[in-house]
Amino acid sequence: MDPVSAERARAQRAATAIGELAPLRPVLDRFVTAERVERHDALPLVASVYHLVPRGASAEYATAVEDAARRLSGMRVTVSGPWAAYAFAPETLG
Image (cartoon, rainbow, N blue to C red; front, side, top):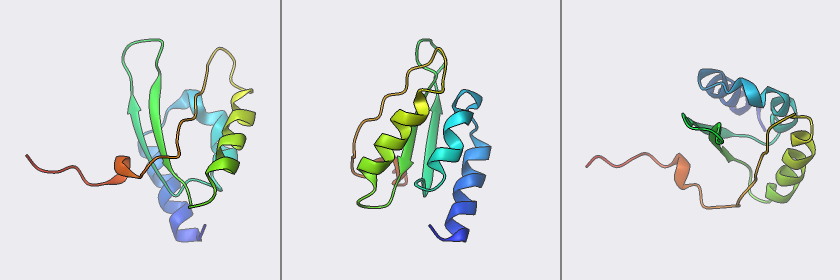
């Protein structure tokens, strides 16, 4: 990932920080080109986090998430996808 994209991704994450996921950040920085976070108000869900990763990197990304998630005590992380990048499309005005 180029330095400008990496910095943009870091700034985006800082704006929507989910502290519980901090241990995953260093592992995922090399994959994430964009992120969308939806914090949940009702347990057991903490958040839904959508990551845009480079084409062809999804298997390596999923493995990295699963490995890093073992460091989170009391939390479960589930990876789904890859999916089309709908989470990053502008919302339509209705």
